[in-house]
Length: 177
Image 1 (cartoon, rainbow, N blue to C red):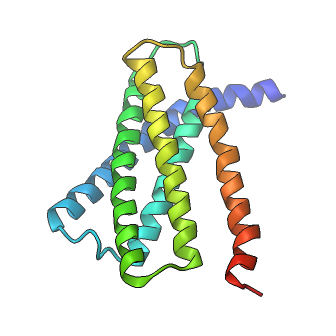
Image 2 (image 1 turned 180 degrees about the vertical axis):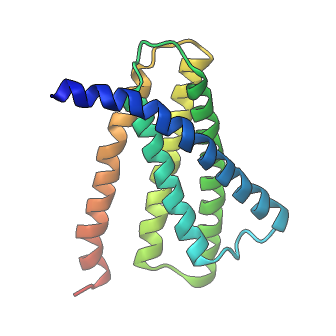
């Protein structure tokens, strides 16, 4: 029965990704346009930063989901190009969010929540930039997609280690009781 589940996932992943990749790309592009034309990057509200951090985590999940259903030896498809565009836009949004977070840290000081979010965003930036790099290797340089798969596999433990640091080390460091 696991082969039936695998078959369903193989058929479902491209459909879900084909729907969510353009939607996420348009949403992130809209955010970039609004922020860059508005010129008020540092004054982004805390809730906006949190919402877009969540959205970047969703993007990382969609990329992971797509790559896990992709055969590393398969030729590139239009979906791979859409994923590359999504990841590049997500990298630009993450850079803007990190800029805004840095400004807020300088203006209002540090807190455990700000440091946890900053660390998560740095890891997201590295993950998304690495994903973009591996997609370029697959799509432009015609390299096998195995390194893209490996990159995605390394992401989960890194996010897990950061979550463990926040959950286990932050309380004693910041005097939580």
